[in-house]
Length: 582
Image (cartoon, rainbow, N blue to C red):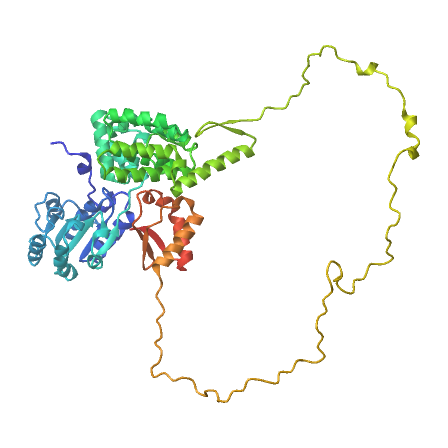
């Protein structure tokens, strides 16, 4: 029977695990030095090697002939664990065995010593699916297990685990496997399978896999079903990467503010049985790619697609500003939320399209920023000497000023024109020699002359009003009748029987601190403007966790994470503080 590649080429030793050296080296040292923990917690995204490392660890600690911390895979224990004949290694799926009765049965079994191996190992996959009662039943055994028991917990959602479980385990965080590591592994498997794969195809598979080795091998398996010579065309067909021309057409319609064209495209897609929610999701991911291109120097390390698609995306990104992209993503995210709560999905989609094509109709902050960015673009064009003409709403045409004429244009001679050079004028200049014959007003007869600057001793009170004489006092006024106080003032202050209660100084207000962080972040990092409103923050040690965010913030968070961290450190005064999404 044929075995799929991700099962056939599952790592058998720690050395075979790709992209996790920080974990495999530590586990090898623990096995080599016999410094084993009683409980391990493996966390990370899917396909990064959690379950594989759990099985390798279970073999390594029970192997009869371990080799430098790795299992030999030749002794009867290693082979028995691989074929599930050794009952001392138990793998439990917490998604289907999540109740308190299952955990009670596990606790009863753990009291027995192993039958064949050195340790009885329990691998609990997707442990976050256990109920609260099951977690509570597991706590005591997990804290003080018998010496022959080792627990290995694996999960993709570590945030759902109780803190009491986390504090009792040795935690290992599996990272997403890098593109280079996936490409290297694909070429190794291709060589062993006697097939060929070119570098661009392996790179495309690695980008589609999104850091998961299992997904990469599954895609490669589908490619081999089409052809044993795998190239980018084969990968595109196998992975279902079809042409997304309508996304680019809609994008250019948004830029041109052509509402009619955009609505016609939506109508055609609707008639072709295209789901409106999926369309809005695809548009959101499409503009997220534009945002990545405008914000990252090497977007090909993040984005998924062929080289032709990336070139087209780069060309399209030049047409939009960051403010316009964020406004469009906000509108689409709101539309996706509204679509899920309404019966007529098409109306919500058309409303979103009209808002995108008519930003002046929206009072949202992101729409205002988009309009300001558009005005700045027009002003920049005017500053460079380009004339911006608005023939239709939303459509602009820029024209450079016409160059100045370098040659004098010939004019058509006018009929009955008079030649001024032939005209004769009489000389009557003698009539203007005698100036006495004209009535010229005489100069002023008397001009006041001042030998020195005038001295003003007193204000001119006599001009326009009578001078008011102020009263003159020879001596200081004497007040004979001063108020007399017959009674002596109270010598002692009022006495209070009880001491005033000293008010305790309030603790640090995390809400006020996070509000200051939002204000500072929006000032220094415009991409987050409007996306941090309504969020809450919590500080635990040197980690600041952000909760209740919208659907756009996780997309732009890798871009603005460093700036948010700088702002949070500045506001809190903690230079070791880090920011993450909850």
